[in-house]
Amino acid sequence: MKERLIFTLIMSFQLSLLMSFWVTWFNLGWTEVFVFSWFKAFSFAWPLAMVISFMITPLSQKLTLKLSAR
View 1 (spheres, rainbow, N blue to C red):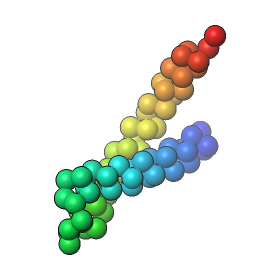
View 2 (view 1 turned 30 degrees about the vertical axis):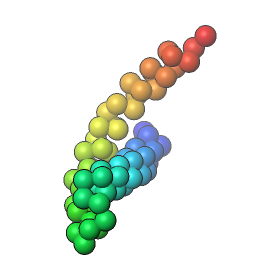
View 3 (view 1 turned 90 degrees about the horizontal axis):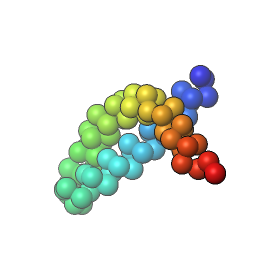
């Protein structure tokens, strides 16, 4: 359980950071409010991504095992 929680925290942090960067850049471009808007988007995205990742990781692992089984 501890490993799953740590994995979820790290993975959701990285994905939220990169995806919020990408979507903010796509929507605003390089403007003077980019960094503020990016941080705001990230601060909303990370908690939700953490909860969603924690909930769907077991399902994703089971689906991966089924799809990769011979």
